[in-house]
Length: 236
Image (tube, rainbow, N blue to C red; front, side, top):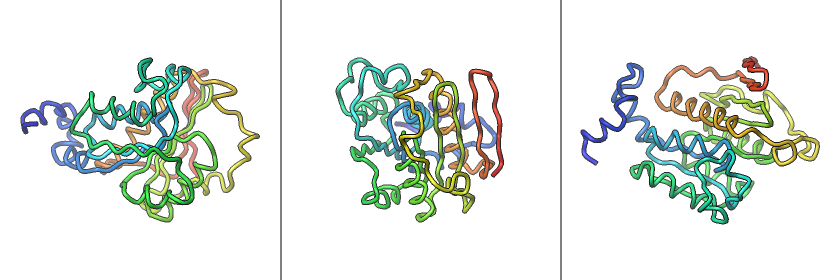
């Protein structure tokens, strides 16, 4: 793509005084890993690819199912039954072929977490279980990687930035994971499709601010209640 076309594509970002050409160069050279190509991962993939992130890794080992389509907006009826990373790759290719997409068809576990996460600058956690969340958090702390955390259920969501320049981590907020069987999830209680769109987009926004070195406020948990339309920030 010619320089003038690159400028035209990202001009609305470049025109922002705090971004400019230098900020766009930082976005283009960044490497971001999104864990999960589901409800939170879908909007994050969409907006980070649209913004021109240079390398976008996506780790997921599931297939697209029909019930995913109310919220996992990068997938569609034609991709039901296919691997989510393949569906995500096709989506990114159609949206922005300049983005280097790396599909990781693996479950993140204690054997591969360090190797996979070490290759990226920023990690976005869109996983759906506490074992994986705490493993990702602990690996980010060990590797010195910034972690953007999000979670959703029903009408409610949470978002935080952990381990940003040595800031606090998930364990400073919740020292130990609860037993998974004690915690309700989207499979049992459901989720309204637009909610993960909101939270995933906020995660992408935080990632872009980190990349372009705009102000980020770690050690805060943002609580989102879309039923009562309340937003609250808790310092920890």
